[in-house]
Length: 352
Ligand SMILES: Cc1ncc(COP(=O)(O)O)c(C=O)c1O
Image 1 (spheres, helix red, strand yellow):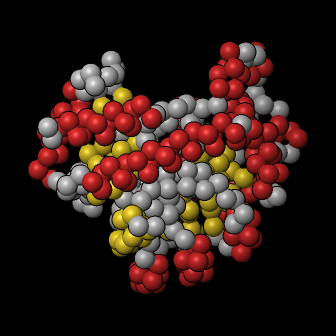
Image 2 (cartoon, rainbow, N blue to C red):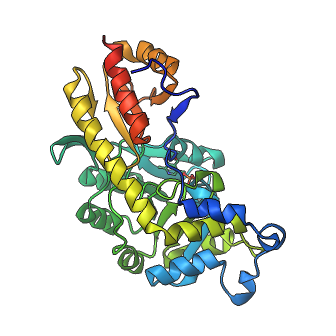
């Protein structure tokens, strides 16, 4: 194999898609109309926020008013916390979490309390696991205003099982509960639980994004399903002049091309299986089960700096985590088949 297969840096560090969105999205962009660029949407005068929220509501059999649109799911997280958390109030988050969960409460004078995950095996692969009894006992003790669960979680890649989730939601009726499903789709495309959960838990908000599964991170669009206790949030987030029409159209096109996304996900699943096998065979490396578009790998502490340098010289960038919960792990965003096999070959070459 040539030493430097790629001429430019391959960014396998931020959970962005390396396959890109449906080719139909590019077709649309080549033919953007003056209306898409120069006009506001007229959807609000029809009594809905937008065509996208209307479409999602129809697909899920949910009222359109329960669909919230946002500038990605970062945006809805920020709006939720800023709207509901007062100075001195608590937000309960996983200890092993996306870095922004750790920051957002502090933006408005609130603060975090954390619940830790445990570890075990899932289908024969090491896995992080939501410890629901511990979560409930921390919830009871701390009485947070908002609770966040990420499923699948970043950077651990695990998801919460339905039984545990039901038990936890039942225990947390006194708070607002956000399930961050930014990585929905890579492990399963099941949606059957959304409406029953919303009906049963009016304090629940389930957040999704077009950034990950639909590979539209740059167009910054996300949506959420909001329970009936979140009326104020629905008003707070509504934009009467509409949203980004181009992003909305891209999202609608993506929703219509499930065939493309299923194909990409299948390739990624094959590569996850390849990574489990390859990393398990390397001494000192431990891959974790992932339902996402990335995989977390524990590796020997003493090679991190040199391995990072070695991979960068080959134009490969992965995320070496350096935070309290993760001192020896790296998070690898799944690339194309070519990128993934070059990465694993390069790690093997590092030891030669
Ligand atoms: C767990 C999690 N939630 C939300 C986001 C934000 O995604 P976006 O704002 O692009 O929807 C990210 C981004 O990486 C993430 O890892």
